Length: 413
Image (cartoon, rainbow, N blue to C red; front, side, top):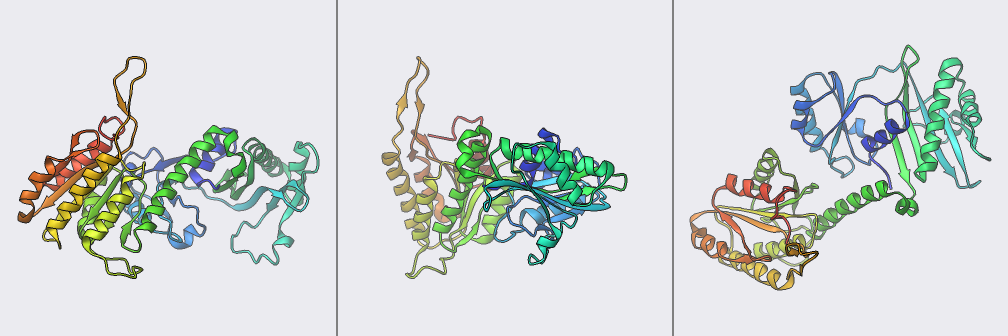
C-alpha cells in the first residue's frame, strides 16, 4: 500500500526528517486561509508518477493565481487518477539534489540503503547501477551503515553528517512501520548546506497493516475510495465524474450535473459519484432507456456506505417521465422493505438504527413534474422519513449538504 506525499511528510516531520512548511488543501477556497507565505508550490496528491510533466505541480505567487491553479489541478487526471487533496508547500531553492532510499533486497533478504547524487526519474536504468550507491544492512543497524552510504556517495564534512542523520531516521521509520520501501527524491541541499526532503514515497507491507492502527485507518479510507471506483465501473462508460465525498449526484444532462456539483461544493458539501443519465454506455451490447439507467444507478448507489445522500436533479423534459416517477417510487418502496432498520436499545438509551440507507433529495423542475412532486413528497423512505422533493435547485443543494454533514442526525437510517 502506497501513501500520498502529504501523508509521508507527516511521518517525516514526526520523526525529525526536515520538511518544508506545508498545508493540506481539500478545496481551492482553502487557499484563502493559507498559512504559508508566498511563493508556494501546489502539488497534486495522486499515486501516479510524472506529476510535474502532466501539469500537476504549479508554482504560484498570489492567492488569485493559487486558487486558479488549484481548480485546474483538482480537475486534472494523471494516468486516470484525480486528486482528492492537494499539498501547498513553501518554495525551496536547492543548489544540489540527492536520492535516498531504504528497501528490502529480496536477493539477500536484508534491508539495503540506496543513495545517488542524481535523483532524475528519467534515468537510463541500464546504467543506474553505475550511479547508485548501496549498503547492505547485514547485521544490527548502527549509524555506521548510514555514514558508509554517505561516504560512498562522495559526501564530506557537514553534508555527510546531515545526510547520514536523515538515512538513520529513514531506517527507523522503515522498521517501525513495517515498510517495503521508503525514499526521498529529491533531498534538496541549499547553498548554505541546509537539507530538505522535497518529495517522499512510502510503500507499506500490506501483511503488517493490522499491527498499526494508524495505517489501518488509512487503508480503510483507500478501500472506500476503491468502492467508489467500482461503482463508477459498474455504471459502464456513462458520463461519470468520480470524487470521494458523501453526496452522489444524478442528472439528465452534463451541464446540469456539473452545475449541481459546483453548487454542492460552494455550499460546503463534498460530492461523490456524479452521473449523467442522458447517455447510454458505449459498452452496452443491448439498448438501454433512461429509466434503465436510473434504476441501475439508484440500486448501485444505495449499497455504498460512503454515500449519505443521493441528490437527483432533473430539469426540463425527460423521456418516459411517468415511468421515471414509478422507478423512484418502486425504489423507495423496495428499499423500505429491504433495509428495515434494526432498533437497538443499550443501557436505556434511545433506539438507534443500525442499517444504512442514503437520504434522497429530489429537484424536479418542469410543469410535468407538478403531480409527481406531490406524490413523491408523501413517500416514506427507510426510517419513516419523507423524501425532500423541491423545484428549486438551491433549496435541494442546501438540504443535501445539510443531511451530509457529520453532525446531522439524518444522514443514516
